[in-house]
Image (tube, rainbow, N blue to C red; front, side, top):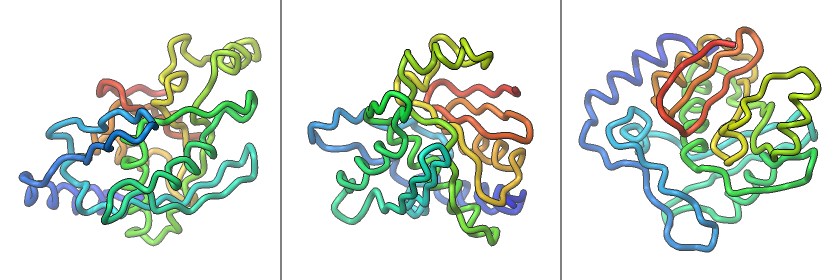
Length: 200
């Protein structure tokens, strides 16, 4: 499981690296990807130490992707499109460009999970959601927000394979990705909005 050891070692790293560059911005490439920078956040400071690699599994579609999304020459645009596809609204078969800040956040979580002896696989409950899907979920008795960040491609619900949900949520909050929701024993929500925390 992701333990406090990952938090403590990460905190020491940030303290030692407070002059590290912030998250890199994408060049104009037709994907309309927003700059994922939040100056002085722990995630931004840790970027040079994060392996920009994701091992994703979507149990809704049974799809898996292992993608290095950033390298020496910048963003791997083909890889980013593959991740966007896995995170699509599978009910409506609709794809959007997700906020890549979320990819860096998940990569940091994966890095900590691997450091703690886990596989690092991240299982996706929900990525992008269309209004149609959001409305459908509300009609089925779920409680997605009417103005959910999922509607804008700025939120992901997930679990780390073999990881403790509470520890993953604490680590996501510590990273200062944005919003963190801890749905006790079920999944973690992260988004690239304002920093806030809630429990479901």
